Length: 284
Length: 281
Image (cartoon, rainbow over all chains, first blue to last red; front, top):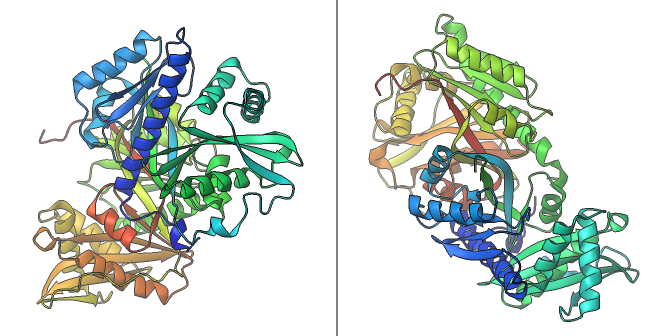
């Protein structure tokens, strides 16, 4: 168990959970809005509602969900009606990530409306600050031949190759929607994008979005043949250093319970601050 | 703690907690064989049918050994119906098998609330409570041979949990738990009156902090922080290799636990299947 002060989550996880939820939601909504602006044919939308965010549209996109709702105040029926209509108009089932710190009445309300739990998500956080262990390690330390570099998002050729690698890191034969969602994350104006190379070969990549001094890490993936060499850890470390050096005092990452992202996050000093349950209304 | 051992750790903590609680209930059931209570164990899963007049069947640990133990759950629901229980509750661990989403939906379970599981390394040296204990208060260990005092402590615990004097059956179960040989218990006293209780039980290297409350008139005085500190000193003198405590998200208790150096490792969903309304509803 780590004992370093800078790798421990600050006291008051409820407030930290709210902060991370806000940063994550704002980043996702920004991503959706920018994609929609560049692709008028897309029905993707990112809107703020009742203190949270709704990202809807784009078919089976995993981005499509409502986040951060009910964290600051109860969610009224009118807001829920609005939320549901936004999803239903786009042919999607309303899906809400409910924080353990959300207003307790929200779960009862959702059950009455026919929502069912469909998955758990962990929200993990890590303090960033001076005297952090990441200061004493280069981004590629511990992984021989690994190099982490920031990608110029205007370098179309590199972006295209990176999107291909990151998509195939999640699925060797990625469906169109996965490639599109990866590209949306990479093209997001507020995102910083990082590439991992092993002995010069593009091996993986990951994104970072800093909102209100919270650095949210997302879309980190490494090709199967380059795994178990510390590439993912190096990608996380590189993004943490970048976020910290740009003023972020905390970093966040979401994960599936027991999944590889959770294991990598624990190794990098992240601790769990919130478990969310994804509630989906199946009868729409 | 290995980052790859989340499921193993969840199994270990859940097992220690439920074995300790099952042991307390079974001890009481042996002395009260006609009470209607019953404990069923299968792998890491547990079912506890409360002793009358408790009308809740509680289930733990489903899906920690692979696909959920459907027969055990269905038997528990059938037995709960036969007993005319009010509801069946289940503490759903996020590391449990994902088939539970289908199993719970098919049986009509609904999410009731969240509860956090925290751990702490016994090597961690927590700071003493920030606020000194009022001069009129003192913390004392509970002597397991002092049956009358245990009775008073059990009453105080029940009062703290319910916010009013507890019914006799709940006091009896608490009395049994406080007197468990695996448990060290402490009382906060004002004069001769017990105003708070905190216990820690140990099993297979796991120190489980539970059975803790403060009566309503004495909350906000830092009593639980001092009771936690007393229990911590006790655990340091034994061989536990991990400490665990539960707390609901967003509560004063959570703040105290985090200040004491515990960190959250998972959040369980407490789900319920309502079988009938309360008698007085």
